[in-house]
Amino acid sequence: MITRFQNDKTFALEMDSTDPLKDFRDRFYIPLQNNGEPCIYFCGNSLGLQPKAARAHIEQELKDWERLGVDGHFHAKRPWLDYHEYLTEKTAKIVGAMPVEVVNMNSLTVNLHLMMVTFYRPTPSRHKILIERGAFPSDQYAVNSQIRFHNYDPSSSLIEMSPREGEDTIHTEDIEKKISEEGGSIALVLFGSVNYYTGQVFDIERITKAAHAKGCTVGFDLAHAAGNIILKLHEWGSDFAVWCTYKYLNAGPGSIAGCFVNERHLANSDLKRFAGWWGHDKKTRFLMGPDFQPIPSAEGWQLSNPSIIQLAALNASLEIFDEAGMDKLQKKSELLTSYLEYLIMDLNSDQIDIITPSDVSKRGCQLSVRFKQNGKRMFQKLIDYGVICDWREPDVIRLAPVPLYNSFIDVYSFVQNLKQNI
Ligand SMILES: *Cc1c(COP(=O)(O)O)cnc(C)c1O
Image (tube, rainbow, N blue to C red; front, side, top):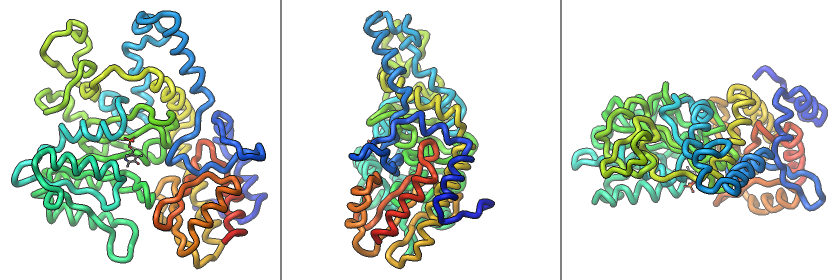
């Protein structure tokens, strides 16, 4: 770290005034406290803030629908028929993929199931799924139900990888060892990319390599990674990945999700999949024939025509990401999160522990702080003060200073408040 941090307000203000991304904060609505001041919003890992441009993007589609009805499919300002294609390049940049490898469709858990339909093909000798222990509940339900769907039993087909005794996060070499020992019976390796609870970043490249060496398919849930850390999905070679767009990608509650299928699978029309008309070859889709011809891209996994309103909101946000650039965002993210870490450590409190890795290459912009006692009370005090962050049972507060709209003074003021209440 080149910057020497200082624990004072002038330093925080100075960092803000020299921040090359400082103007992006104004492109978002920051929720207000009762006193009319903006709150300190550290919850972008859960629901990203609204880009001001989202309204105009959505209103354009409402207007075209008002004006044109069904003709909007062809004559809207951005014709709806291939509206999702406006987002493809920008989406590919966010996750480091080729444009043919990505598509926005459905919601995250739906996409996870669709990907498992294709990439989890258990056999009596290879039927297991390896996941991290403490994966997000929806992912746990999804893998358990997929195992049962194929008439296997999670008690013998699910392997959950735990941290070492007394530790909170998992060593990559332990994952590699597990895969090398048990890979012969593992059909699918499925990991988060950033664990939602600890904020740990998993090494997609090394996990993918280890899984493929043992003949397993491998996929990642990027819910907490997309728009947060630099991803190179194509280069890292996993078979698939899925993510939502309402967390760091700021596309609005429940908005349309993303999906990546590695190029090597795209031409293989024999892959088993659940099919729908929007995945069918565009040239013959409207001939409405009975035989399914998948589009030879990630779009071949689409089922339905997508919600244009949701795509419009996502498009507004992706334009901002495109302008800011993931490289610059990553740089600010490292500084901002490290500043938060530095200030918390400077409290010298034996009441709190940061469970997120201190190595910046193993985390994004989230710090998970464990309170040895009175955590819930502290959380309530933070809310009263105008901080929006979240509490995770049994004892963790998650804080996510987001480089697009959070400032160094947000971080400084937050820790000042923590100090008064600890
Ligand atoms: C947020 C999140 C989800 C939510 O799934 P939805 O289908 O979007 O409701 C699933 N998995 C992970 C890892 C998440 O962080």
